[in-house]
Image (cartoon, rainbow, N blue to C red; front, top):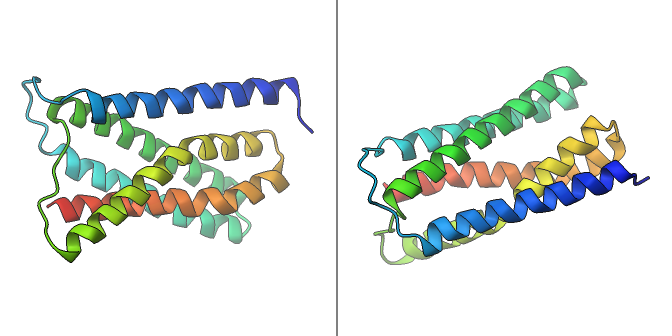
Length: 172
């Protein structure tokens, strides 16, 4: 059952998602980082920790809902979203100041790195609108639709969070 508020939400979701992808595309592909006089070399580690936190909260949220603890599930999922949002802010700040980090590995590990990186980036693009829609459906108490979408959203979000940590360590 779609309503006018659904239409408004989906327009909002599309605008936010396209704007986020467009901004990140500009930041990483068009704008060359640097020119900011700040040492943010600690940020990739912080961002990896935020990704690990998000992944942990997602797994705990799944366990909570499977054990029937809906209120705990809700708090854990909102916390995972907050950790991911803070990650994104830190990611933007770091890349604005320092630009892109070039991978130095060679051989087979280079192929693995770029495979992980490409899948991470592509799935992160679809992640935001999926998360927002999953949250929207829960807020509207449309739990059947929420569960159906969450079965896709959770593994994608978890993959992106975990591979964010993997990418961090591969770059080190």
